[in-house]
Image (tube, rainbow, N blue to C red; front, side, top):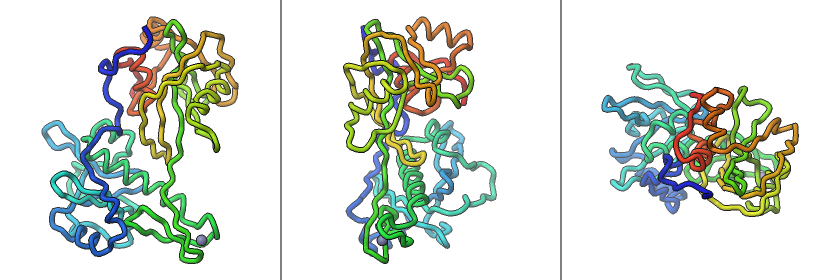
Length: 312
Ligand SMILES: [Zn+2]
């Protein structure tokens, strides 16, 4: 047996279809955007420093805190148009230096790592879009051609240079993340120097210029663990805007051999059978990956059931 049926584990967070049509064709239409903003059904939320307000609804759900546009603090905010849902409700995010205060205390700020485990697919789709735009805007204020300060256009989806006319588009950095398995279906897990003691997870790395994603998987596994991969199977992707990654998840197959770690990024790599991993997690020797990352899902998919994880 090699891989495990997908229904053995939960779906990958931030990859669901939340039903939002991004309406990209309207981003340059200021009249349309103005009418969309003014419509009474339009909903707005503030994003600041990668966080937004969320609140529990009382029936066990958690929602993104939104407001009608006439209540929205537009002053000195950047406005991102995110799209419309199936009912025609349009959504905007306002990027501000701080989240708005609220009279009641039901709402609280949350970053995407926390919120993604709590919110509906629709709210996650809106929040990950807004956070990705905010991170890109924050890090790309100046023209990479001439150095002039750029201005926001296309409802947050372009930065335009007034000096040389260049248009800059949101940047996404592809990264590969892979669970390596051997012929006996053992999994190779590694630990990075700066991780908490005992934490092991999948290997990962950025795709380099001029490289295919399959080549990146093979190179990263060789560099980090000294293992030769001969078969690369794509599983799923996950947006990971910290600040701008797209995680491309793989299972990579390799003949068993002793790992030789690089000693810089990865300090230890070990092969685990499922029984090895179960025993190591139960004894507390190994902390499996957790949270909403695709790494946790890749390992759980191989393991066949949810992992015993530390709550970080
Ligand atoms: Zn320029």
